[in-house]
Image: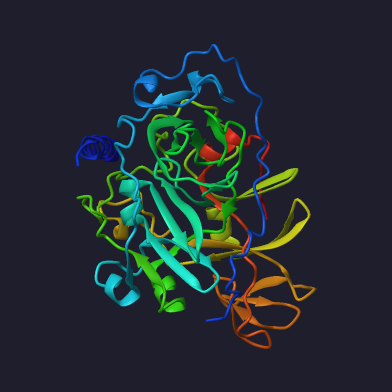
Length: 396
C-alpha cells in the first residue's frame, strides 16, 4: 500500500513541478574536510547525450566523465523542479508557527550567521542558491537519496547559480549551473558534463537536525521562508513511504550490495583522501558516540534523538524517529578528546565536560567551547555505495 501511495504522490509532485551559544570567528572558515572523490577521465566525445538534452541545454556535451547511458530522466524537464534563487528568511519565532519540533532542517553556519533550511521547503525545490555570512553557497536536498549537502558556489573565480536538470544518475539529482550549463552530480559535487567537467565543488559543513534543536541553540538564527514565489504544499511529503527499509529505491538501476546494508539504510559518510567511511544510523542509535579516525583525521560521531524522517509519513513533521548525527574533530586546543556516553549524556574522558549533539560543551571545564565540524553527508546506503564502492562500513 505504501508503494502505491508513494507512486501516486510522486506523479503529483512531477505534475505540479511543471507548473508555475558560543562566539565563532566572523570570517568564513574553510570546511574541516573536503571530498576525496577524484575527477574521472573524459569519455568519448562521440557518445550521444541523454535523450532530449540538446533541445533543453546549451551544454558542451562533447565533454563528459560519466557514461550518458547511466543518466535517466526523473520526469520533470529542465527547471521543472524550480530552484530557489532569491531566498527570503524569517525569524525563529515567526517560523515556529509552522515548523514542528521533530521535523528536520538543514543547519548551515558561516561565522555568526546561522541559517535553517527546512526540508519541508527543499523537498519541493531541491536547490537554494543562497549567501550565508557573505559566502555564496548552494544548499541542496535530493529526496531520492536523502542527501542534504551544501557547496560553495565559486568555481574558477565565478559565482555560479544552480538549477535542476530533471535528470538522475544512480537516482541522484544532477544539477546544472546557469552560467555554463555544466551538469553537476549532487552526491559528489563533481562536474560530469560540459565546460567544467572534472571540476569539484567545495563542500561546506551542513547537518540535518531537528527544528527543536535549532531553535534552542540558535534563537537569533534565520530560517528560509515559505514565501518562495512558487505555490507548493509545504509541510506535505510527496514521497510517502519512500524510506521503507524493505522496498527498493525509485528509478535506481545501479549496483547494490544488500549483503552489506539494506539499500535505503540511513548512513552518514565521511570521505577523506584514501579513506571513506559510512556510519549507519541504526548502529549510531545503539552506541550513541563513536571515536574514530578517517584518512588520518581524528573525529567523533554523535547521535542525538528527536529528529523525524521527512520521507515516511504524509506530513514531513509526522515521520518516525530517526535521530540526527554530527561529526566533529576530536582535537581541541591540541588535546585529543575521547567521548563516551554516560547516563544518556556525551562526556569527554579527559576533562569530564558534557557535550550536546551540535558539538557544544554545555557543562564542565570546557563549557562554552565548540568542536570543529567535519564535512559529513547523509545518504541512503545505495546512493553512496554507487559512487564509492570502496567505502568501509563502521561496525562497533
